[in-house]
Image (cartoon, rainbow, N blue to C red):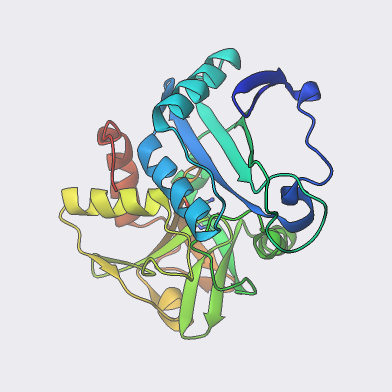
Length: 282
Ligand code: PMP
């Protein structure tokens, strides 16, 4: 694997990250995962905008040169012969002796490399089982931060009990998102999802679904829903850059709808590629 390390391409073995990079001790950094279809980035500018948002909110001083970064990342795809897949990009606050305050002087560490990604066709067709998990994370889930311990623990719990995704709730009146996805319910054709605030990551796929809903004349409601509403919905589905849209057919013991993927999730999946030449959402 060839890695983009700052503005250089190095072999993975030569990409030596310092032990005191703040990503290591503090998870002090932010990241993005961008999908590549047929050699082209999908919604690249939206991902870069969110990366800038995360950097700003985390007060990491790093000016992204959009054009230069895009060229470097396209070169990264070429060097790794990625035509369909994804790239991971991470920016940490940089290297400094371990101490909580922001270092006075530190140069953010930038790395990017390809991550193998393929469409989860089986899950998209048949749906998945999810489990509820208390949202044990902090209150700034809008920042795409490297601190993913809560997400990782939730996901592993889901897999341990034979489910595929954990759906977070803050309390029984407040479902937030999945461990690595946004969550949607559908009732009488109305799509509902958590509003974009500090309790969720504003998924680029979530925004794309909002756009698709408009194209398809499907009502889209950004409003908190409860655990009871989740379980009683006609349809439930999740979204992310790597999952696209995946129907949820069971949550713990509760079968959703008739236990089969619902029509709205199918409609969105069908529309996914019809519209995927769209350049920018935000
Ligand atoms: N929420 C969380 C917690 C996530 O980790 C992700 C994806 N990494 C998402 C939502 C979905 O975001 P996106 O559609 O931009 O991939």
